[in-house]
Each structure stands twice: as structure tokens, then as C-alpha cells.
Length: 353
Image 1 (spheres, rainbow, N blue to C red):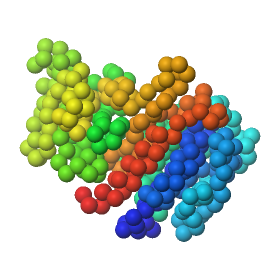
Image 2: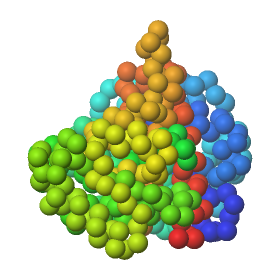
Image 3: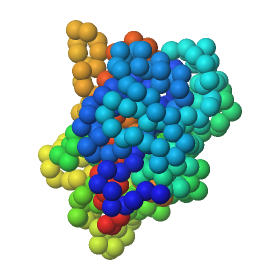
Image 4: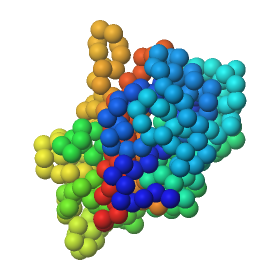
């Protein structure tokens, strides 16, 4: 079991889809020795996948296969890992190629992480990217990580928190995520908006904010201009904000979505409750991602995805499998380092809330 007083919590890191960049950035992240000052990282993935990662990155590690936390060596230069027995030989997958077996491996790595976290063997899981099509090929009908985590932890109310730039950066949480725009509009109810406002408060407290300042974005242009451009604000968003204020939460809104993110980055708020996926993903990635115009490569990939409302702690990189970069030693581990740091912060703060 995890010792809650351990200054270095055990953090499980799933490798994601073996055909993507997850294995590469995992090894690159562990090459930062200061990671071991903050936590005890444990990879969740298969031996051939990790061996491939070492070849791709030209990084030398001693591999330590474990069956329980008691077997960890937890020191720089050593990779402690739980094998899942899905990828048993290197011919089972190919970099950048969609595959049923790689989809099954990615899925089982997540399931193993959930199991270890629920048992208390690890303090948190940090997930590398999966490919939704590959997961479906393997027979698992989930829209993504968040839905898998919710299903296997029996969680009905949860939220996707995105963060970039640390404590002075941008934090957003979603009322709706992986659904069509038509469905998103229907799912924005007073009950759901209120729930996500509460999750926003919980999330920022786990990040160390004693009294989070929460901005709630409108759905329509100019937050509907008092009903001129739609009624969702009046019917669902404003009543939820009113109830949240009655509960003592520091909530403002609905704030027009074209200014709420600028105001948040200017220091007016600590977090934005966004109504749908792209309303927040676009500004967050404009803020956290940078691309070199000459090389066409990302020079900065800063972003963390945290699922709020689960009985376990889960953070993730905020990017995909990047099949076009897989196996080329071109992937940037910055987002994974941020996600590990966030997992450690939440693990230390959560027990005090």
C-alpha cells in the first residue's frame, strides 16, 4: 500500500499506444534525474515496447521488471516497470501503424494502472496517448481515456481539466467533451454546469489554491446578450452560477467566451468552466504549444489533462499519439514532465482537502 506520508509518491506511467510516441517520451522523461527527487516513477507496459524506446532514444537504462511495488529500485538509471503481457515480441506492432494488438495493449496498460491505483499501490497514474480507432479495433467502445477511467472506477460525474503554464498559466474544465456540437448543446444543463463548477473548485484546491476564483464561460456569442443570441445562459448557466454562489464558491459569469481566457491569463480568475471541447482546447493550445516556422516541429508542448471527480488521481499529456513522429526520436517530453509534476502535487494536496 502507498504510504501517504512518503515524500516521494509512487506514480504509475502508462506507455499508451506502442505504435505512437508515448514510449519515447516516457523514457526521455525518466532521463531527467530530478524526477526521482519528486516521485518514484513506475512504467506500465511490456518489455519489447520499453526496449524499443531505449533504441529509439539512444538512452541507456537498466530494466527492472516488477510484480509489486516492493520490487522497485526507484533510482536514476533504472526503469521499474509492470509488464502486462500483451506485446510479447517486437513483430506485434510497428511504429506509426494502426493495429488491433497495439490498441489492446494501450487499453490494458490503462486498466492495469487503474487497478494499481484503486488498490493503493500507486498514488496516481499518468497516461500517455492512446489511439481511439485502435482501441475500437481491439473491441473496446470508449471515446477516450476519460471514459475508460470513469467506467472502470464506477464514476458518473467527472470533468476534464486542462492546464498549461503552471500556477500563473491557464486552467480550464469542461461541461461537455467528446460529443458533437449538437449533443453538447443538449447536455449543458443547470445540474451539469453546477457539478462542473464544484469540480473546478475541487481541482484548484488540489493544486494548492485555498479559494479558487472561477469564471464560467457563456455558450453563445457575447454570452447571449441577455437572450438576443440564445437562451442557454438564462435557462442553465446563470441558475447554476447562482446556486454555486449560494454554496459559498467564488464564481463569476457567464463571461463572454471571447474574453474569458484573456481575463484569466491576466490574473482575474484561476480557472475557466468551458461549455464544450474546442471552446477551451483552442486557447489552451495556442498558449501552451509553440511550433518552429522553419522546421515545422513543436518547440514547446506544455499542457496537462487531469480527470477530476475520480476516486483515483489521473493526469495525462495533452497531445495525441503523433504517428508521424513515432520511432524517429523527435517527440518532446515536456507535457509528460508537466503531467508527472501535477500528479505529485495533487497526491500531496488531496489528502488535506
